[in-house]
Amino acid sequence: MRAAIIRHTLRSLKSQWWPAAQVASWQEQQLIRMMRHAVTAVPFYRQLGIDAAALVSAADLARFPILHKRDIQADPDAFLAAGADRKCLRSSRTSGTTGEPTVTWFDEESWALTKYALKIRRILAVTSPWFRRLLIVNEQLPEATNRYRKERAFGTGFLYSEHIVSLYDDMALHRQTIREFRPDMVYAFPSFLLELIRSYEQAGEAIPAIGTLFTSSETLTPAARREIETSFQGRLFDLYGSTEFKEVAWQCREGRYHLNFESVYLEAPRCDASEHGGPLLLSGLANRAMPLLRYDTGDLGSLGESTCPCGRHTPQLILTRGRVDDMLQLPSGRRLFSDTLTSLVDALPGVQQYRILHERPARFVVQLVSRERPSVEIVEGCRRRMLQALSEPVEILVEHVPGFDCAGKHQAFVRLW
Image 1 (spheres, rainbow, N blue to C red):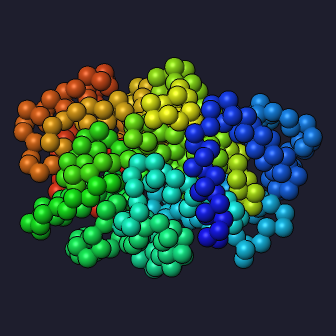
Image 2: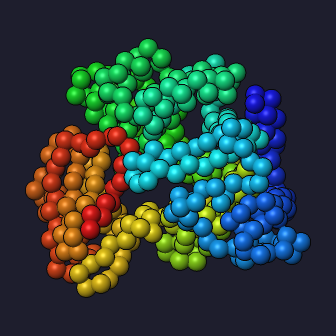
Image 3: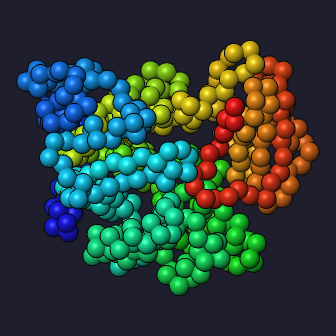
């Protein structure tokens, strides 16, 4: 495995600087190869009756149906390629905290690329990791984290030291781990880092300086970014990914999200197609054990320009605040994106974290976390602007709460009906 990690890392360090035309050509060739493999070796795609020889361009991807998570959950075996033996494969499982767990299987080569090499490239792109220490806050339960720790120790330890902890550990234990391990880099959910900041404040302990912070899996608001960077005196780089494909896109030092084009092909509208972009459809280019084509992530976004001031010409992902499933449905039947409200809360001064609960069509509860209780003027101003934005007679309650349970992913908007 280590030889494969080194090989893929060296290749990806070169390919990130390819010109746009070479990236596009390479992606099309790999996509054709994967489409042909899918209709030949994978039960779900074989039943479509598509002739492998007829797949000759990226445009042929439109002949495949859009895939959803529920399709994989209903019959995961249908997506395993012929001859794929689970005993020889690597698995990736969601925590299940936001729904039914999903398991994806990877062959050794794709695992070396997606799980290790592309992560190493991402770290090297924004900081120097040599002889430094990375703390990873894993979303799995402690027992699963212990198993993950044993495997992980053999993957990237030749570049930097790693220590892996569970999100579900007590905050006092997290502070102790940080004191003892003294990380230079931390990888965690934004909500965890915000909760960690509050934990230090409540314990009366100084917040340590951590130069490089990586976040993923949750929407990163501008307010949360400011709070995290200021408190830890570091620079934050956000990632976009999924269990089914691992890391999909990452922020460079210019703040733009670069697609890991070596492992995924992205279908999305161009940046000027619509205000909210469109569904993000991902097709795997590396995992031959469980090829997934046109997988709907449930997120919204668009493709940006290919040129970045950092010098990379790889496709850029522009993420839209909110998911397809996070739309407001008002009593009149109108549907609006959740950022109609979240953008207003983002602008509130002093708010560290928040959650909007859509309890029923005509009732919203806005929960705010801040060091000091927001003034009546701030609360009423927020409520008034929300009512104006919705333009319908609804009830909006704004309340101050001490914090949220950081077990699992934090959702800024939660629909309860």
